[in-house]
Length: 85
Image (cartoon, rainbow, N blue to C red; front, side, top):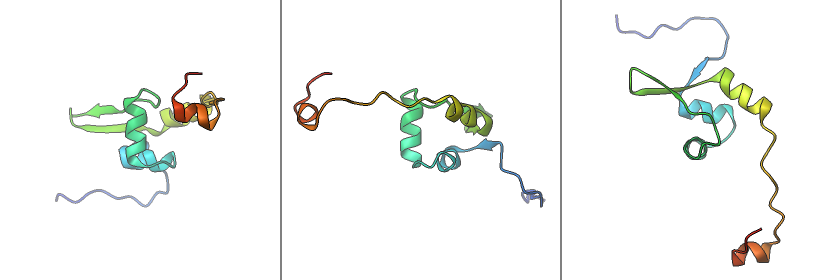
């Protein structure tokens, strides 16, 4: 009793905690959480008011729809001096 069930089927988990969701997107956990907090990545879902997870299918959909961020066309000097675009 109290043992975690483990099956022998080979399938990826559907619900991912932050560290696994970050690894799934090939970024660090801290960068993943920063992008979530900034609203640039989907928010996780809460379970039992404390466990937060991300749906792998939602992450897949985000990646499929993501068109990239606008390229910064300022040169390095303008960036260093803080000039607006």
